[in-house]
Image 1 (cartoon, rainbow, N blue to C red):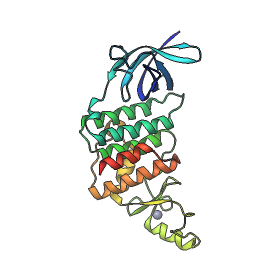
Image 2 (image 1 turned 135 degrees about the horizontal axis):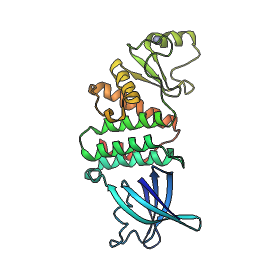
Image 3 (image 1 turned 135 degrees about the vertical axis):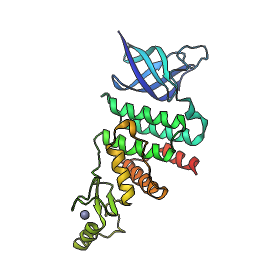
Image 4 (image 1 turned 90 degrees about the vertical axis):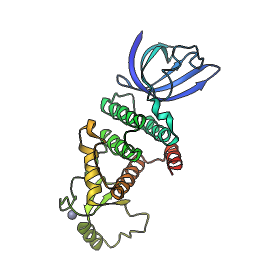
Length: 259
Ligand SMILES: [Zn+2]
C-alpha cells in the first residue's frame, strides 16, 4: 500500500553503497524513518529531495518491516541555510532538537514552527539569535512545557527585574525572590541543590512572554535591546537544555562557529 506524506528531512544517513536512511518529521504521521534506494547516485530522481533540511512530498510503501520511498518531490529546499557555517549550525541544532522531541504523533504546530524558523534562517532577514531563542521557547511551549512568564508567580506583578526559575518554568520578581530567600535561608544560591535561575530584565521578560504567546506568523517581529536579547537568549537556551535534560552537539558547534 502506498502512503503519501509531506515532511521535513531531519536526518539523512548513508547506508551501504548507494542507499540512504532518512528520518522525516511528517505532517501526517509524525516522525518516520524510511529507506531511499540508490539515493546517493546523482542520476537518482529522489536524490535532491531526500537531503537534510528539505521539505518534500514523499510516497512511501512498506516492504518487510521497513518503510521505503517510492517517489519524492522537493517543496522547499531552504538553500540559503548552506550560505554560512553559523546558519548551518543553527539549522543543525533545530533538526537535532526535533529528532529528540518528535514522536509518531503528528504535530502540525511544531512542524509549522520548524519550517518558519528554517525559512527565516535561509532568508537571512532576521538575526540568528532571535530565531534560535524563538524556536527554543516556542517549541517547548508547543510540546507541553509552556513557561508562565506573564507575571510574578507570587505577587503577579509584571514590572520589575525577574528571576526565571528554569526547572519550575515560572518567574519571580526581585522583591518576592529576596523575601523567599530570607524565609528559606537553607537555600544557598551557590549550592547545586538550589534551582537554576536566570535573570530577566523587564524588557527581557516582555520579549520572552511575546515569544511564548504571540501569533506564530509574528514570531520574529519583536524589538529588544542588545542587552535584553542576551538575557532572552540565555533564558531560552537554559530552559530547553534543562527541560529536555540533555546537551546537543549541534548547539556546541553553533556556538563555536558563531563567535
Ligand atoms: Zn513578586
